[in-house]
Image (tube, rainbow over all chains, first blue to last red; front, top):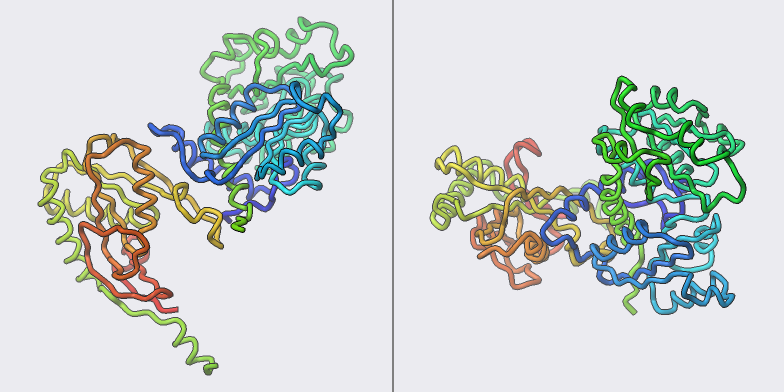
Length: 312
Length: 190
């Protein structure tokens, strides 16, 4: 197989295991490309990509932008803060206005879950979801799994625990789908108040005790506490969260085995993980960032290859 | 149009252009020609063009080191998929291969090695691709089979094993012992 089964990357839910493996194999090649003296290939030079960020983002946006430039695409950037969205323009209108300037692909982050799926039904361009509310963040899950594959050789059969705010996390949901499609076993851990009520219907188990979870796992993905999404108090204080679910060096050293520590960033140092854990050899946080570039190049390249040429 | 058994034979036949002995003679000659121009290969690197140039390149390196006692020959593999000019134009999706160039090409003489030279488009892509690794002093091209009168671009080989006349629609297939079970070059008519 050498072609994706989809024309958009809206979520991990909509793609197959073969799609994920193809993205990983392609990302292997791009990982080599980004270590060359000239880190750029001309593949997408006749493709124009619009980066539409209706919600704040630093690393995802930077990563996408760099991936697009490394593939020689033309790009236009848009952020909601400084646009007509504030004047009341609808999503479809905004995007259609941009598309009438002959844009081939759209990378979109939006605060509303399902924004990408909605858009894909109304416009004629390839859409990549860069995060839609608390729904999915597919490229983050892909780069997380790619990083596990790189470190452990394979994702299948590995035990992964996702710790923290599962309720508000699109990273958690996309990771659960991706890990399960690749054959990993997934547990979630965190305050009961931050667990979606039907989380176990996704085939994951809930473990309330961090130490138990860490003793079980090969990989711990420590999610950020998303204070900005918490409209009510889900736990009494940050200090109490850290005492129960924060990962420090003492816990890590007392496990009796080496686990891999991941974090999607940005880190609240001293909350989810302490500084010495974040900077330890077991943490692959910066590898994740580098792999993110290769994985996003692979996704862009594979989706672009499905866009029909229009020579007229 | 044709009776079934006849049509099969008519539409798909193959002719052996080079047998194992002829290939070995050609490889020795090519190795000697390389030595004439590159001495001890201290300033020269060989680059096999993926996917199938790698086999030929490895054979030549084996000959140079074992038969002609060249101490060290640097060999890299270059994949040109992301540089091709038919991205989004061909019916079949393009499949990438591994690139492995673990040395500096800046100020080196580069010899591209590919099994068949046909339209010249792969070599055009390879010329762009190698530039991303540095600026070689010069680039040469070695090919086992040179299909005459079929070039789309002004590209010619510096070393050739055999010139072949084949029309469009015919395919030249180079088989290698280690990959395909025999050393042979076939002309395949479809």
